[in-house]
Length: 70
Image: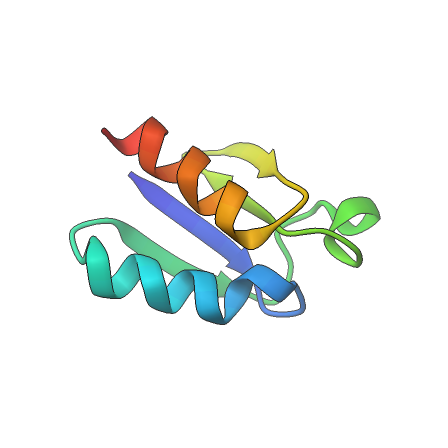
């Protein structure tokens, strides 16, 4: 599983750190842009294996990523 973060998105900080700590086997990257600027500025969003996943909170996004992983 590969999770890509936009460096400008709120999720690129704490959420990425939490994933790296709890699931180091998940490949993560921080990019200048993940191509979803319309959502990126106001809600947590990542790209997981090429699919955009957005949420209302970082915790909800984390749970979604983990469900996809497991």
